[in-house]
Image (tube, rainbow, N blue to C red; front, side):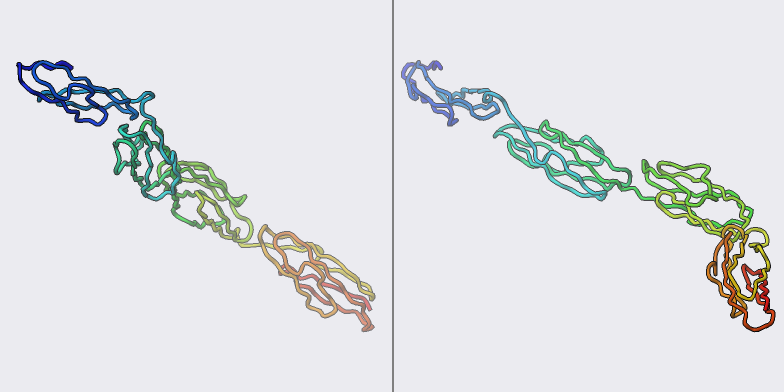
Length: 323
């Protein structure tokens, strides 16, 4: 560095940066020369320093250390529940290395640390999730941070039950759900058929039909969006009807066993009872729909004919035993 000054004019040269050293010409008079040296830069960013020479400012610019800045973040991802919350990410880099942080998802907001130099911390918040599971990212110091949030879907149905006459009919159920929340509808009874809305997303409607009923009153269910919808139906016209075969039987004096077949509508309940002490029901004391009752007749030691009855599904079965 050359200095131009009038004869006899004194001057000095000083460094204002520790990494710049004046090696010759720290003082002088008139014209002169100042020599200086610059230390190597170990920081991964450029730097600027000055010297004050003869009252003038001399600026020294030095490039960043070889290799440039490197960055890492920790953690690189996070998994959270459906509720709102906040968390932080650490940034590691060399002294003097600058960086920025931006969110790439509308539901993720950076609350502090949107920019920094050297090591630092980024704080962020996230909103509650009312829909299906989702993922979003932030770009922090050139690195990708991924945030995974659990599903916040909730479901409701209206109504939750419906009653039908024996003739059957059609009905519908309204489903309320968050946008993007998927659901299914299934029937748990053969006589209830889903006709529309077996699957859906968000708000929707499920249509179904109920078959006519020729038997006893009955109850069945649908499972809609994880909720239970109950269907009740009245008994068939006139209620349940029953018949038995045979309606009578004759036994010898030694007695024996026999069976009576019962015919009834599906779901129609019945019972069987003996009205004589010498007739014992051995199986089928109760049932539903078609069935069978078995009974045993004890030996007759009275010396005369006897007659007894059973009441089976409301019908009379007559037993005659010879002496």
